Length: 406
Image 1 (cartoon, helix red, strand yellow):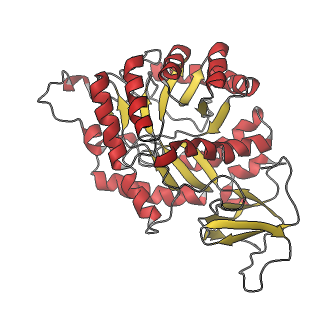
Image 2 (cartoon, helix red, strand yellow):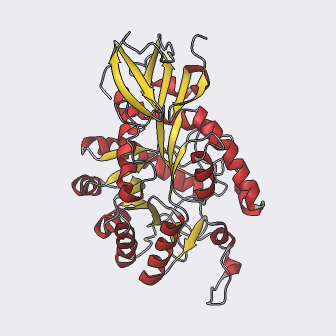
Image 3 (cartoon, one colour):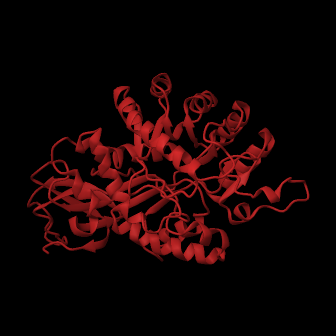
């Protein structure tokens, strides 16, 4: 994506891919022509940290409803996600395999999904959703509800970690998600805690590497990030509490920083306890500095939202992207949610379910195109109101919205 809009070109789509960018007016006589004048064409957007099954359902319903109901809600939200212009998501926790298949088979509209499957967590980790009354676990214990549903899997020790990683790869994971530190949303793992030893993380990385893909890690703190990098983790999820030396290490390692605008504002996840809200404020303060440090040290950064259990907030997906304009120029904001995120997803290598390039408007890339009323390279805020400003949405060469001429 150039820093200025390219004029005088037509975009030629054949089947699922972009065939070429040709001089205006040279389209073949038998082509179907869409007049996109007074709009700017951009690639379909990518959310590199999304939870397909968990974004649009309240936490209580997710924990108590029949599993098919959770999937039906996710199917409805997938259609809405696509109409917000997000043609691709990297799902970082949850059993999204069935919905991915249904979307790929054109049974339902939705973004293409890069699934991680169940989050891999140690006992007491960020993916351990059991209650205190469920402890202790024994060899005779049943799997927890979250494990049975495929949301998370608890694994301790290198042997168990390898087994659980291989299970997700067997199910079709394009990358693996591990929990390398504490979080805000969970009740029993303080945000400063270190989770998984370096040896355990190396076991996960090795199992993923054997399948030609990579590991990403949920972690906020500098110490946790450094351990993950030492173990070979290639994508840091969150990381808002990183200090400058750690950010420099990410850059030197060539790791990706999948970061979200966690600003404790009106679009933030809502938390009940005072401790959780205090952690949220701490992360919001760290977010400001994290983007500045990432820009300073030229870390490879990708955009994600990590919306959880928040039906009323999923509509903020594009608006959250526009918040990055306080640190980056509009063209760089768009790159973080298009070509940069596409490069991150391509690290799944042999496990990439969609091997053509995404996030770009170029020959042989998948035909994901949005026609924006106006120029987002001048006014990035246009992305925040897709209902009003996205006149055309195309995914895989198929038109999902056409309001051209209105």
